[in-house]
Picture 1 (cartoon, one colour):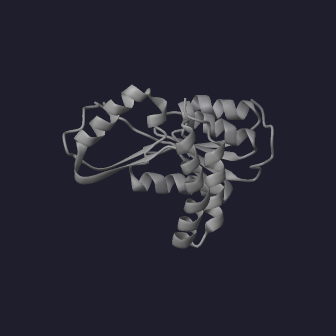
Picture 2 (tube, rainbow, N blue to C red):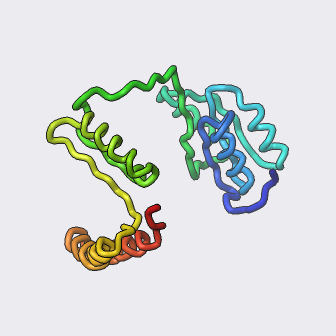
Picture 3 (cartoon, one colour):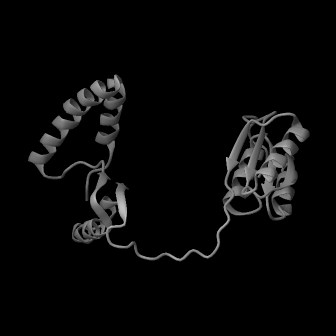
Length: 196
């Protein structure tokens, strides 16, 4: 990788969790666009620093534990000491202990928001998914399902498009005084692929 764009030239970007993985990719990407990268991690980040220097980039390594306020303050100070400015922060740091996934208890959830989930399952699987959501939902709880594909059945499709094209912009416009945003929503939903 080499510096291929001056887009971030003269800018200082802090990247936490920059020693490996996604954080390292963010750091290298920012450096390749000319940024001075503050490579911040609780672990040594020699590989990231070396890669940035090899491409001709500029960086400063700072040991940081983002769970400790004093440590993050010291990180900010190190960035300011190195370049006199902070223009951006990519907060990628994460610290995981052993994570054990267990089923939710019955009636333990207030609300479920499903965005583009149902459309990825076969129709016969959706029934099981909905039953599971009902099982974990508290009495009086609610679930919201956002799916933006078009109904394949002709008569439903006509009703759907009438609602989408006429009702949603009017209702959204009344509630938010921004009818144009709901026209945009309508257009983007219409461009969404049809259901299988």
